[in-house]
Length: 185
Image (cartoon, rainbow, N blue to C red; front, top):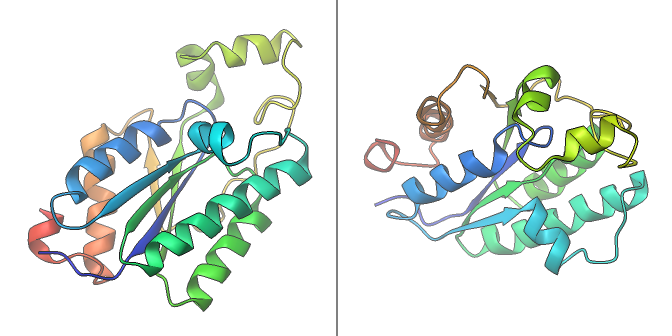
């Protein structure tokens, strides 16, 4: 059985990079050994951050809200998987700092793919709209994305399978003592 203390896995990356896909795989794997909750950026915007726009200030507030809920859950033994673009390094650093100050392990996972691959994938049709000028403030096109300088884990979703990304994250958790060997297998 896994450890009883919670942690935060913070998946960051551009739209369509595979954050939600990897978070679902992580949840499916971890749920047999501990309580797990996914805070998906799209869902959080619908329920917790309704009314926020896409200005820098609103994006930072959205990340703060996700971070706050993640800390509350992790404090009570939940493995939290937060999957949100979270484009600004300062916001991610603040979430990490607050988690670590509360004694909650924090793992930043950069889900990365080149922009041309994301444009080709464009599952939601957002890149097409952004490139046509129909969608303002789109991260990676008309708004910046500050890639992590030193993420704890990087998953290259253009070449890594979901399983390879999952294994990389689980191995990091095991090495940090956040999962026992059975839960990481």
